[in-house]
Amino acid sequence: MDATTKALIETIGATGYAVTVGADSDGNKVVEAADKKTGETFVVRADCLYMAAVELVQQVGIDLEDG
Image (tube, rainbow, N blue to C red; front, top):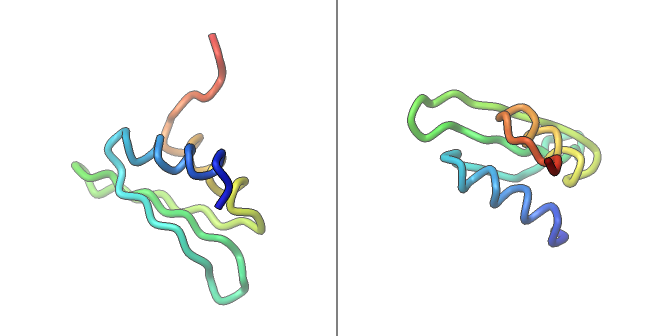
C-alpha cells in the first residue's frame, strides 16, 4: 500500500470509522468503513486500492479539497 492510500485510510479511521481492506473473489480491491457509533457501513470495490480509498473518503463525507 502506497503512502497516499495509507493516509486516506487512516484519515477515514480517525473520523470514527473502523476500516478494513481486502479483495473480492474477482480480484477487486475492497475497502469498507463502518461507523463505530451507528454501525452504518460503506463498501467500495475497485481495480485500484487508491481509487477505492478515494471513493470511500467521498462516501463517508470527508472533504479532501483545500479551501
